[in-house]
Length: 524
Image (cartoon, rainbow, N blue to C red; front, side, top):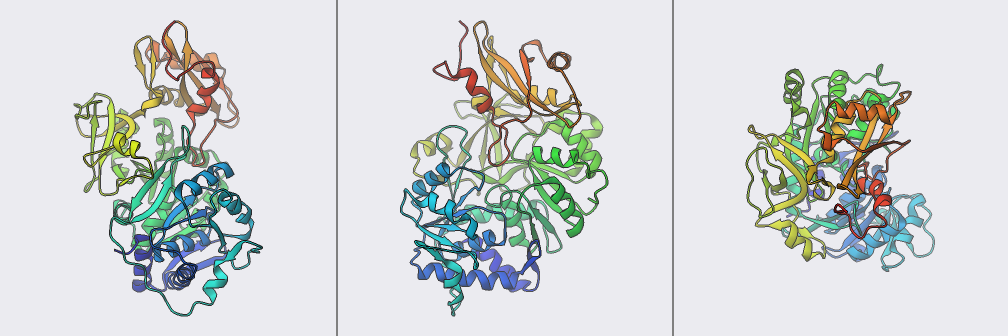
């Protein structure tokens, strides 16, 4: 089997050579041009001695060079290890060392120092892709080598269970964990993203999220379908609104935080967003209030679903018609991540013993699908704990209703036990998000001598809005059971987030627990 990151772009070049593959500012690549360029880069990697299965780390930037590098590594039979640009040098160095990467690749000259820092403790060789990048001692220009390559090398053919990539999680606790994916699991996920949203040659997808992570699913779908990826260097609302109008973007992926920022932008009311036919929000929970605002402004174009690094094809999906029906019926279904996808994936809610729970009961969301990780990199303990009989235990808590709609509660570690009652932060956050002044919120546990743990919240306010903590607490009391109402609410200028935009409850929780041995506190 050919690495899917090599096979699908090459297939697109054969079928639609003049189709525009990439737009990056004023720069363009057709599929034919992309194929020719990546074939030479792959030849250069092979000439440098890259062997099948060896890992190549890339310091992520959103640009044409990232796409070219990913395809070239795959074509040469290597395994991709993306280093999210928002992470620290220490995190990058750990990933490179843990993955035992052969090379660390800087895409442009400005990133060479970051690549060298990442490689410093592991002994990996440093490469730079950009033709204009100054290399210096100890750094090899891959583009210069590629320019001297004459023969077109065939893509390396390997077993379907061969290592395709190692994706490191953002690491909510301790060191990041390496999640492996095979040729087969990557291929299944790519096909699912393209088919679930009926991506075709006429589509133009926005690539504003990190292409090494969630944003990469837009890239994957483009390669399968021969669509066009319009790359932005960062997820900046003004640039996104401009790109949607200029390039007639038909589909984009967003995290809920970014969707809110987009709707809050001063140009959102006047921007031409009529070309959008699919806006997929995922990777973090969205409050029903935000979903309603999005439907009002964007129309019937919303999709959501459930996936994660360990299973990055969507296991569930809820489409535009279901969103509209939920809005019109004023049901809780706006909080759902949808039902099982039409084919390939199976989802069930399991108890601690692994047995399926009946509708309505909260348990762990488990997924069985061809895009589930084959295993964790050098972590047999996680393989044992998370992978059982083909099922992935996701670590997310949820429930399913009588019609099969899945509702997420929280990560298992985020559950709050106060006075013997279980409180799931997502439910409290959904209530707080209904307040018109609240932009974002996070709910977490703090130690309490009487109740063991108490509920506390942190919020940010929408531009120009005002709200006192007492008013927010009163708002919660009208909507929540007494034991679920936060004991206190902190109004903050911003909430801590991971490199991919997820709110980090653990950072908010940490100062309160620093004098306690564990994160579970009993009544005193």
